[in-house]
Image (cartoon, rainbow, N blue to C red; front, side):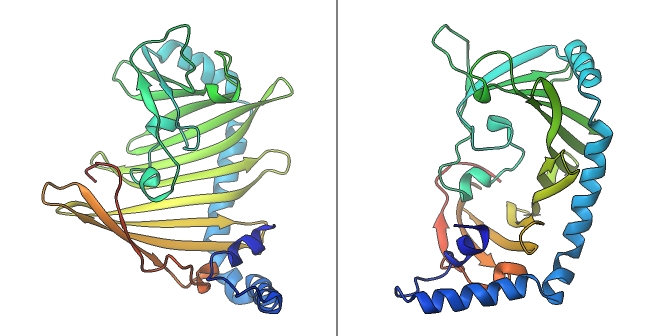
Length: 277
């Protein structure tokens, strides 16, 4: 099943009528290549180009960053689990493990033993800021194949992820987390393809707060090579009397592939994790 077909699975079943499925598929393909969709996706195309330019700047900087991190890391922590999340236990998104099933952050290990099989190693500087992440889950050892350097500039935090390919380190992924007075307001995570210098898969979350805490999250998923294609879903959160996130409703916006209404549009879900937003 390709990406177009998977989008059609979002809809209610087609009552096993292949003609209905084929018709919807053709209409969807035509729309994704239309001027209307291209115009909607234009800002995201620009964003992917911006991030690809950043990746180029860091392409040959792995050893430079590693030497700096080796000096700046003052303490380390390990975690187990969390493989499905960017950065595992310390994933910047405050809600991704709530709204996506099966995405656990894992847990921090109080100590490492011979039986421990950590998936992430985190390095902190003298101010206890997270500055380095080794994804040990790829290698199941201490020689991480995937390593992230975290660079801060004011309230913008940028993550540069390097992956080992044929004994060379290539930029594989980038992230940007923006904060306001220490509170996260947006998180971007994208995949970089070094062989053609492009960002293909781009994810962004924007966070809105009320006096009760986190109230709304806008999630965008953009893929350049299919269509291009954009989805935009809004998550509206409710809180209990103690200020914990209790429920959320999903609103699927009409732009891009959102013209296909998934069955979960308007559905209310309970928050299964005790967390204050």
